[in-house]
Amino acid sequence: MNQVFTQQAGKIMIITGLIIAAAGFLIFYSDKIPFLGKLPGDIRIKRENFEFYFPIGTSIVISLIISLIMYLIYKIRGG
Image (cartoon, rainbow, N blue to C red):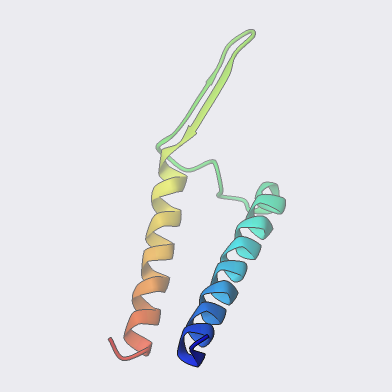
C-alpha cells in the first residue's frame, strides 16, 4: 500500500474514534450537563401514556459549537 494513503487512513480513523468517544462521553454524562435538553425551543409533550421529546434548541446549540470547532480547525491548518 501507498504510505501516504495509510497515513491519511490512520488520521481519519483517529479522528473518527475521537468523535465517537466524545459522543459517548456526552451521552453518558448528559444528565449532569445542566443546560442540555432544557433550552428554549426544546419540545416536550407529556400525556398519561405518552411522552414526546424533540430537542430543537439543544440541537441548534450543539450544531453551532461543532461548526465553530470545525471552522477553527480549518483556520489553524491554514485553510
